[in-house]
Image: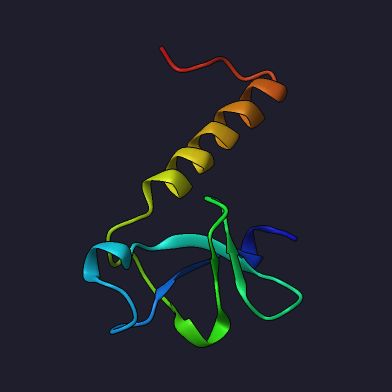
Length: 82
C-alpha cells in the first residue's frame, strides 16, 4: 500500500444522518469494502468517494494521520516543531 491507495470516503447520502457523514481516510479492503484509519468499515454499496477537500473530516482519522506523521518524523531524526 502507498499514499496513492488512500482515498477520502464517507457514507452515501440518505443512509445516515448528516452528522455521521464525515469524510474518512480509507483504503479498499480485499472484500471490496473500505477500511478507515479510525477503524470504521464502510460497505462498498453504502460508501461514496469524495474528491477534493469537501465535507467535515473524521477527527479520529485526522488525529491518527497527525500522530503517524509525528512518529515518522521522529523516526527519521527530524526535530519536533517548537
